[in-house]
Length: 112
Image (cartoon, rainbow, N blue to C red; front, side, top):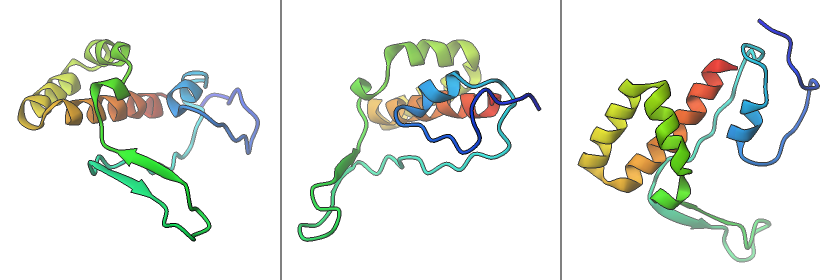
């Protein structure tokens, strides 16, 4: 295991892919993951709740994924990209976008 290039207890805000790409390889012991689930729904906190006004979408389009991530995934893991392409043919571009989004992040998690 290599030494981390970040302080213990560090907290980051932003896209986790950008954060992980800045980390040394093999420097993390454990990653807890609570990903989006591609439920194809939009969620909003109820009016009157402490979280009122908070909202997020869990539906995916090609606009949600950087086009470069497709090429990167196809290059780094052609077998995974072939499975994702099959999922696109069976389930559409939304599923493809979600799987590309997750796959590039999972590859970075494996690296760190």
